[in-house]
Length: 436
Image (cartoon, rainbow, N blue to C red):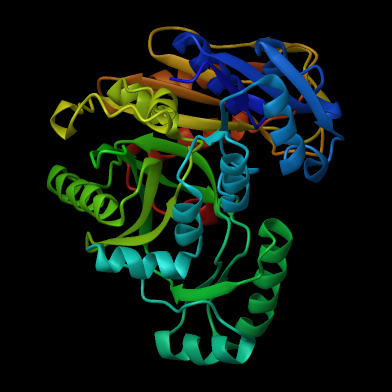
């Protein structure tokens, strides 16, 4: 087991990882930008190093400075969290070259799975149904031909990167394609350093359902259940819940078995998430796989009692899973609301809701300043209860009790979603936010 881990991230996820390490008896090293010098993750870590200016390119994306900090601190491993360098194969390789364990898949696996069209082909061979689409497109003329063959509407998607809805465009008809293609390429290049895009069939109406898996070096793999992530605005998730109210027991059992078999066939090791679109006929269409910790991993932890961050670390240290699929128990219902800033500001007062099975993962402390340099996520409010009905009542009460003064937030919007009849009934899909 590792004795010291550097956390190459910031915000609530850095705090989450540091706390997990403390519970495991592992020393922690924080890195921070000049903007984050007073941040909570810096205060909680055993050691900390400033690695650059406020701009992420100068700090949290600066691979050489992070590696230097790890070497200087004597860290044996680096946990990347999510975002930033978490899916960067080059950084994972750089860790390996310097004798540091990257807590995630090996560089070769990350490279192979980072190309989404190639990944879909791989998963198709592994037994999953994949959305009809293309390989990486060379130019707009090839895109026009491909879209006509697939049939409108279509989605243009970035081949690299993931999260935040960047490099994605919905194209309803042919005269929209050329402009959308160029926009998606520009956005993908700016966000991920790779302007490659591909086209796939637009599946609608549909729910966004994802499966959390853990796999060790000995070939054992388990699925910790499903999460519904259909409540999105511009492809950015707002609320996630587990299990999905749109999936019945037979569907759940079948897709979990298929997902575990697919992960075993491709030889994946680590924590990962397989993302699907569930159409109105009940068919699961594989979209992509995230080879990192998901923002919404907490809802799965609340239901299963399995700490995904700790198991990420153990697997990276070569420790086999201490349980099998038969040991996984999802009892009750859990929902997570992402609490986002609606602008810059400085936190004056924070009141966190309490009670059984209420969790607020955050980096906020009085005096915390929200700047324009980083993601707007302030925290994640997660609640769990024995039934979905009780969970929603608990969530509503917790949202009303959560007080964040000095920073404008989306708490009121989250309350309005929770009070919407479509959400209460569980009958929502990806069109929900477009109809509000």
